[in-house]
Image (cartoon, rainbow over all chains, first blue to last red; front, side, top):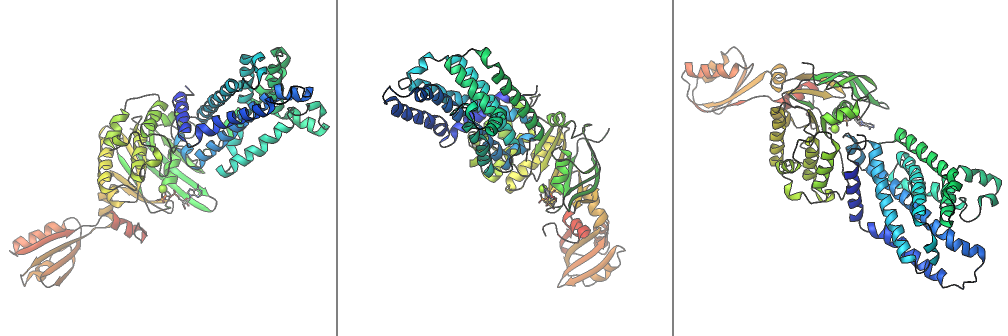
Length: 250
Length: 305
Ligand SMILES: Nc1ncnc2c1ncn2[C@@H]1O[C@H](COP(=O)(O)OP(=O)(O)OP(=O)(O)O)[C@@H](O)[C@H]1O
Ligand SMILES: [Mg+2]
């Protein structure tokens, strides 16, 4: 089978990640802490906040948190792959029947697991500060997040497949991914952006991820977001196929 | 039986550097074949083209009847590779690496724990890769190259960084691979290693193969000189030695004689001369050329230069 060794590699990579100093703490504990602290500050405000503000707190903030965690997972994926490439680890793995897709998939699964752990912890400790969470369709939101994450991660594959050195991996990834948040519709509706930016927003996959996540969080039906899911799937397929073609082992 | 590896007119350049130039040779089933040459001669490039890790500019390569480029995954199932320079994940444990590698192949017949034991790594099985010494890393990579019980094993500078004891252990291991009918293709710049281990060697320099043969034939062909050193008080000895047909020169200092000549029969003839003339000797030894001398002769410099 094509993905021979996938589970073993995934399990080992997960263990290796947790052995790293700050590995578990940096990825899981820090976002949860930030979330709790923000929650305390925002939660103690007067309840008479403006509608827009409260809308951002109840919908935008959780979605922003999810997107940020996803992007940081992607950046760490990009960095790990380029460190593996530079250190000759990829080359050693290549001298086996292992395929690049398997290596990338293993890292993606590790990132998904860590992201899921972070989000579950956030929901658990955040309940006190964000009572809105109770009405959220958790299963649907998780599914939407999984779809979005896979799609954003596939952009990560593509970046990881071609970045020249480990030192550039993180900055290049950040420069590509973080600006996408600004125009994704999270802070201002896409329709309110200048026309030129609107065009950019329409081709940036994150826009569809944000639309999907916000919609599902608010309780929209999936049928209202088939377009978003389609766009994300398209990005996933295109980026994965392309990165398998241009993947550099060394 | 077709050769296990067939390389025909392979050329590989990097910019203006010609790393491998019109190289052709064949490796037969069940032999230990060594590629020897100085740093930068093109050993690793040649080997990695055969392994399917690099693509030559020109030429044809067939390995176990497969094309290493189009059938690379099929080929990887059947071969084992130890790279000259490689790393693993810093914090992977020794046993985890062996376990992972074992899971990558379709067939599993080798016992990883036994392999670690043979390579003297069993008490390091829980150590992180980053905490292994250079020699221990090297031995781990040899273990990984053997984990799928490959039909053909590639070892690039297999004993670099190993102490003499570990080196001997690895040599025994490699001979063990051959005794199970497998083929070994290795590179080294240790002439002693090539001489003791290889059935045949190819000498490569500046990307070109200079000669290929068994170590003994290479020595006989390129360095027929033989030297006998002996000690005797017999006053007429020098006279007698000069009458031996194959002798080129006899020198003497105190009572020590150095007899130079050519051909394998020289030693026998000196002994015959001693016994016919009843010359009493108090010391007798021979100085025979080795691969090191062949290399010097063929390239004009020592391999370590
Ligand atoms: N990836 C590369 N890019 C550019 N030049 C290369 C590359 N790989 C090898 N070379 C050049 O090709 C030549 C042959 O290198 P190669 O690594 O095959 O030598 P080698 O015989 O294995 O040497 P060593 O004993 O040092 O391992 C060298 O001049 C080297 O600089
Ligand atoms: Mg080399």
